[in-house]
Length: 638
Image 1 (cartoon, rainbow, N blue to C red):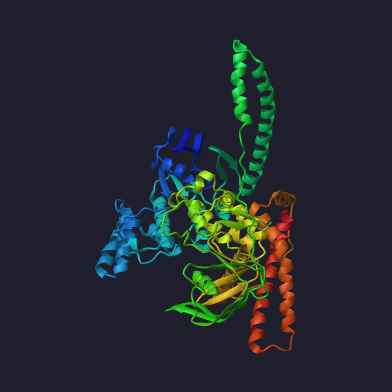
Image 2 (cartoon, helix red, strand yellow):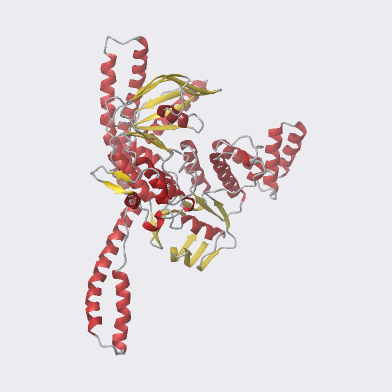
């Protein structure tokens, strides 16, 4: 069944074309990821499909039986209404019953609760109420009677997401879900839950996201908008990269061929007399088509990062017995750590446990309640904050940059002017004279990154740097950070970004406890899930009153069919990245194991040091064992 049929769609803003003459169909069961550079029209296309905007040319037809549900980057609410009133459509009897029940439970009024329970019974709403509870709990949405106007940006985004998920549950069978960056402002646990939820719902989906693991989990086709066209790629992200590279190579070969033809035809055109026959007129028309192809440009210009870094001294940062609390919220409880040169540390934990406060304490922006933070004399911080681009008055991009400096030093020597530096970051001469307020979210992020790097920092603190950045810019930022010789402290909900860059994690477990985990995020999550499975099995065994019989291990049976099936399995893009990471990290874990073992054999340790090193050694052993098992699994596939 065709959900959407689009023919010859064209849209421009002023003289700037976003897309021209694109056509596509969305069928029932399709799960499509839409990717592109910032500012080329991803959100505009979603708005046209939802009817919020109109194309300049072309048609967009939605099947009459299809119900379209859209999750937007900037959610729209009734600001004076409560969270509950915004979440539920009061015109739907089941949703109204759930809304009344939720409000009654918040009020704790016995009469209201009794009446609301009766209403729930009448509308058979209990099954869906349980689903709603799960959505609200997983997205950490509480205080439902609070006005939406009082919510923070992250809370508004989560309420909007909850509203979208609740809505698709109530719609009839044929639902088309449009989602614009749904993972922004969600913590890692929420993102993983959302992946599972969307897989189970089996909705038809068109998704805009820069989260590559999320794309791999919930979509099976990638559409890319580029140079006013729409390109389609079946399969996962790795397949997209391979097919795109092949397409560009083919296009470049076609342009080279057109250039050769153009030179020959140009010579013929110059020799022809003014009066032409019908035959020569046809050749003349063909000449202009060849000229257009020959002059086509495949613009694969990428953001380049080549910043000079201030030299790192011997001392980086030492944290000694640091405590910090805000009332009942304990952020740090005796935090001890000595940072080393070139460390790449990922910071993970639920929203609200104090990650941003921790970053501020390290930089001296916020003072601890007790303890010391000793920062080396040569340390220059570069802090990419979630607040985004900060400016007191609106001004043009180049004027804003010149408030920092006129010249910018490069690692290769020499310097660049403000205008040249902006071009390095893909701000064209026209874009440099755009007002800050007119920039897209991704362009503001790019400009923010630019102003941080020009200070030549040697200790980068990146707090959610991937939000609003497009995939091409993310890829170049990743490569820059891999080559970066300074220290990196990274807070991110982008698991792909985290896995590729960090070598160990600070796990914020709550109540001021920070655990140092020797590995990347995917390895940590596998270990945690293994622990949970083991705890669940242990609990089942302990609670059983029957005698537990341990079965004798049986030899593993194989047959030709199962071996063929195993051989046919291919590594996914995510698994290949994981395999490469394991090859790098397993030797590092072995080194840590050797170091901790040697330390334990020392006769100069006190009791506290022995306990601390023993715990670290246990962590490393567990991580190494898990890594070896996973490596063997992946090596079989390879």
